[in-house]
Image 1 (tube, rainbow over the protein chains, first blue to last red):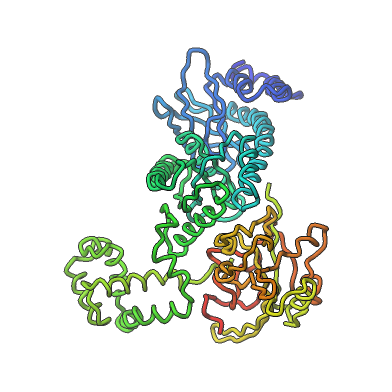
Image 2: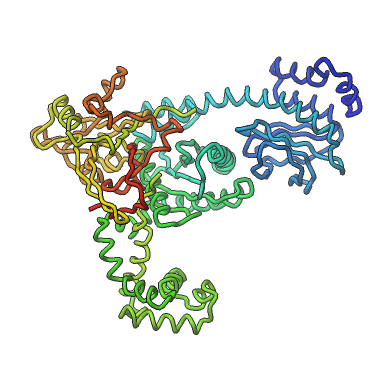
Length: 419
Length: 189
């Protein structure tokens, strides 16, 4: 049935249009998304596809003889509940499409209709929106089944990472139900999006992030398990049998997480940070690796870092500083940087910022000058002034360490969030 | 679907510092001489020219990232799905690693038993649908239970003056407070 016939049906009014009846019948008998899209594609006479909320392709349909070249993941921007029109990247290049979000408060997926060189007429688009309800019904039905499975799966992972298993045999037996081999050791990483807001919008973003992370990581590395908890994605990484290979596994985790960042970025619209726990030879100790991964991630947050991959066994001085009592930190900070703050306050200066930029540039004056948008000679003059005010030499390693530590303490002096 | 996550909710405007909660807990569990799973501390604060005083009734906070759980060499700790951190006394050797690691003084050593113990949120009572003894003993209803999976829980403060840094451990305790002001750690005396 083409667009003209649909118009006629709609004009007839009264009873439910035939195309909707056909679609709802397909939902009722549980024919699944491919059958539903076949009906829809034939009605619209255009290639159509359905993705999940993260843009992962769930099903598609093309007219006979036509090849759309749908990719596995469509980079769709986060949108409100209204349809939009724009370019989508297919395997053969960009195509213009009408995209209808499925769901209102919580978008469960997208219906993508490729255009044939010109925009969809408003009437057709309105009917496509009606048809999208049938697709949403089918998607919700499938999501309910997936949700139950995901809940059981998450509960098992949660029991594992919170030490609720007594014996390794229990873990191995329960893991086999899900097709996982827990007789081998696993490493653990925790991923979290940067600058995420709370509420329904934040939750939708987390789901999108979890879905994309699972899609890519489980495809790139056999045996990787992902789970979502409290806004974070937990990644269990199958590890070689001994700690001797830990260094190379860590490097591989870094590399794949960096790849995930670049691959998933278009669909996420924001960066993510990661924490990696230490390696333990038995999955019974994954609980400890999980806590360590969260500490590595948490400390990076405390010190204002974003988008990094932080490993617990490489935290070094940050971990020590966090454990020093607050009053001691205050005294140290004031002792080292207090005179410079006072100088800036009295002279309306920016020596503190200058020093921070210089240290953040690893003592590279040229780079620091660029960051501050000043001439290198101006920077050198300011550095001499800093040395005079503080009575230090920036060439001395000990002085530089003290200053670096004092700046690091700035983040700790902010105190906890009052949420 | 979010699942139940227990937390304590303390209304510092209502707490009179009477220590009923502290006594109820100590008596119910027949704690050792030096042990008090729940303790009431007095906090004097000063901020932006204003002064005040309140009481903090604190026990184990059943943290989202419990340090006791991480450092215990005997795997004596575990965290239930409802968030309660359980200490299995039979596995404890009394090494006190957890006592040193916890920033909130949750785990406490009993010299007579040679083991550590801590608040278990009266898990036995809770599983039977009853409230913990400290909550039951609070006659001003300053101390209550809260489900953190409830979206309304975000309305409560996660930190008050006198409480240690929460950024790594994420304790399951919330506060009702009217101290106001732009707080940062170290403002309290």
